[in-house]
Image (cartoon, rainbow, N blue to C red; front, side, top):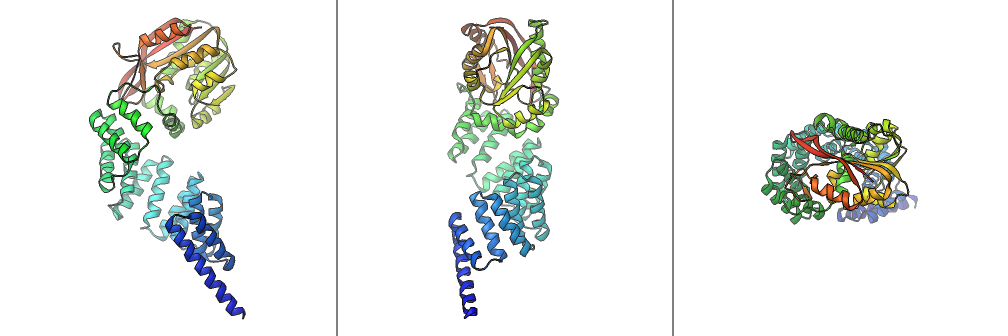
Length: 439
């Protein structure tokens, strides 16, 4: 009788396992999870069932629970590359990069030709900005499978990040020849062509991205730059936050050493020329980033607050220990809502990511005490340009006359407005207007 019951339990567990696999294959991870849990209740220690339970939980976003199931599977049988690969996926999604890399490498010691493990390892290395290592991994994968469209896309991303634009463009072309329905590959291709000054080709790539379901708001923003249309008032917020969050850890070195950025230094020097010897009780650093400008302002102000849209940038700024308060917010929204008042507001390199400055000037006028100063730097548009233009760099440049008109409209006296170096772009010098306004 007991033997028949055991056999019946095993058969029921097997049936639930097979039903769970069908649900996984059909994309119903919730039903799959229930089946695998039911199977394990009948036959608890089956490595394959635990592996599949882990896969279902990864798909459901239950990452910690997925790791529990996968590690139980490994304890029963550590020789299966799939379980290590899925463990790596769960760890990567939890942000445990070193743990994920170790799991993918373990999978590859068990099966050096595991395409999923190679792809996932290369992807997590790319996401953690280990681009040279990622490139090596994708080249191993492509040597095994030259028709892996997603691997060609990732290969292109790694090359792009390493500054090898021509090679990256070839990889994106290979990816799209294999699978044209990759909107991000079209967007990245468009970006390379835009940076090369090939505006018509870039526009064609962006339109392909749009046709294949890419982010319409971001693509229309890029199209405005390469088709030289009337620019939108502002970029998509997610674009700005993502741009700065992605390279917060390298931001200072990239901006100062590679792009020869001087905006923070020259703005504070302009402020000191316009108001020699003046000190400030409370300053606000708009778009404070990692605190480059704040560090220059610190000797002039009793207290400095900062606001930025990118949390990773704020984390870097916090480490400087110079800010009284740091707020993650859109600067226009923050200026409209904050109860704080300041006698100095500085905007060193933030209006390059905002076209229409009317609401920003209104917000600064709202928070600035009478007699307070507003110091700003913007990329300088050509003399015959409209109020503001969106450049191929996807940064805005503003006209001198526009800044003067905004100052008058919002009750500012213009103490100084000078044209000086700002940074480089594609190894070409970019000039800026440095202004100091009094409320």
